[in-house]
Image 1 (cartoon, one colour):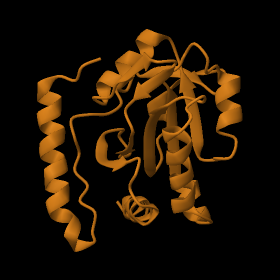
Image 2 (cartoon, one colour):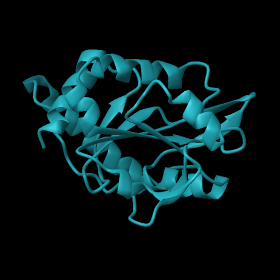
Image 3 (cartoon, one colour):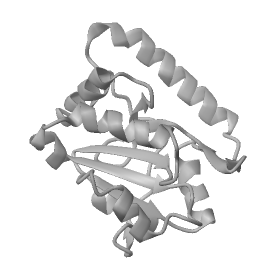
Image 4 (tube, helix red, strand yellow):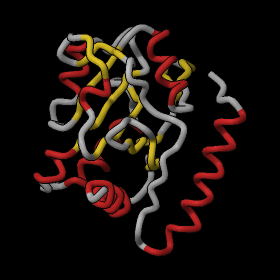
Length: 187
């Protein structure tokens, strides 16, 4: 699914401002015109239909992935787990929304099993059309190709209203992810 040019321009400008401000050690959080809509509803890993905004906490991350992903998804989840470490306070404030881009294979039971090591994670699936609508809200994409699925690789940091305030790259160092999470918890 192509991203509209206006979304690309907003994201590009936003990323440039982040790069310029990153030298200070403080993370610059800015609300972007991307994020969850109040009526966004998917099937959770417990098999129940849920509005995603009902699960928002103080620190929120959203990631598009799939359970059979051979590389980026487990690597991103491992980096996140390393960044959180044993910080029980942060675990209590955090919700990770893991939205499957493979609704054909990722049923609620499979998501529950895959995310069992991450007590702060909530897995979601839905129809292909529902997943595409959520991707569009975030300027994200996914595409099946060569027996796997190519997809967006950002961890989207959301505020308590479900709006994107920061983007964490899948390859950001653990220390940076930790700083982002801790500073987001102070908002």
